[in-house]
Amino acid sequence: MNHRLCVGLVVTLSGRWPQELPRKRHAAYGAWAREALAAYDLYMPPDVLCTPQEVDAAIEEMRARGVDAVVMVYGAFTGDDIPAAIVQRLGVPLILWAPEEPPYSREERLWANALCAMTMNASSLDRLGYACQTVYGGLADARATGKVRALLGGYAARKALSGLTLGLFGYRPTNYYVSTLDEALIRRTFGMAVNSTDLKVVFDEMAALDEAEVRADMEAVSARWDISRLPEGHLENHSRLYLALKRQMAAQGYDIGVIKCWPEMGALHTQPCAVLGRLLDDGISIGCEGDADAAITQALMMRLAGQSPFITDMIDLDEAENTLLFWHCGNAAPSLHNERYAPTLCNHPLVGQGSAFYAALKPGAVTIARLHNRRGQYRLALMRGQALERDRCTRGCMSVVHVETPVRDVAQRLIDEGFAHHYCLVWADVYEEMKGAAAAMGVPVVEL
Image (cartoon, rainbow, N blue to C red; front, top):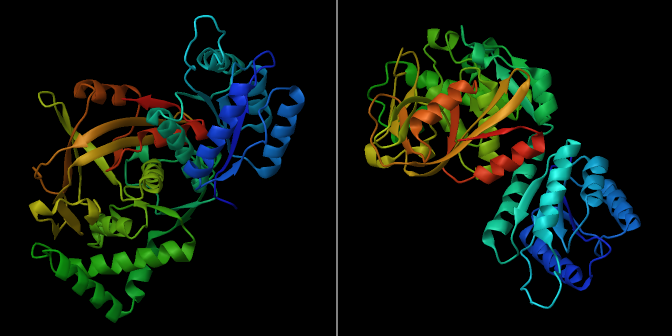
């Protein structure tokens, strides 16, 4: 399967409007797209679309080329027929892009009326039951061009997920109903297959590893982190699990993983928290506690940001500072650790029986997200925040994040909307890209 996004770019107008400005926009927006959208395959009709025959021909060519998304730039005012034909016949995401109006002259006519047309078209598509995205502003407006790029980045990420395999190592921890999953819904929404491997296969792989390879990893870990608080035998189990999961992800053909990390793993003193963090920095995304929805969110954010996210609980809030405290039991990737506060590799912070990082996480802008299946429909919770420079206040990994929405309202809305307790943080602003991916998947967004 070709995972490279194919974008159709069309410039449109209705027949009563002059064509000089639309043709100028066709040339200008085409030149911009060839440079700014070079990461994608691009198809642009050779001229402005106006007549039904021109629209039909362009749609058929886009269908033949396998276009995944269409950007419709208003050369001038465009009736509802053109965007309706695009979404109805291609069935792909549509971005309506209205440049700002040209300078007015008191005695001259309007030359574009693009904002009005976009408003009308978006309303008509909504009435027809179709979704679209809208962008206002010209090529000189970084907000407009940035939104187009972000939306297409989200569409590209969604396409990249399609055809991947989500691998389950075990199912879900005891009494964790939120970690149940719907394989058919995952396939329908994300285009991903779901397969499973028993934890015993992982344990057998751990036992069969070459001793020299295990010792080499143990030495590398000991050289990098303070392991003085790690119980006897836990470092070896850590290295064995790290190597075994790497091998099993490849052997099973899993692109994304999720693991039942307790109680069986704890019973064998191999709780995997720190292992999962290390694997993330190797580009191997495995979610914890059997939470497939969090694992998919993590994989999507990882693809968009190009760096390791953090699956975490929200455990407290501070109304005076308007901050949320995100914590988990030791799974944050080393690239997220704030070295100022001396991260360590220790036993599991709650029940022991494994390896976990104790670390404060680095400051910076973050995007916070959660995909969640609520009664057969995925939704995406999404917000921006600023991770603060703070030391950890308890064992495990933690980040204090300032957000704009009153934190009590954030917590209450997440609960009221039925979102589960795991969220994903990534140290990048991929808010608009996540919205784009959600739009491509037909997933409603709950913005916080």
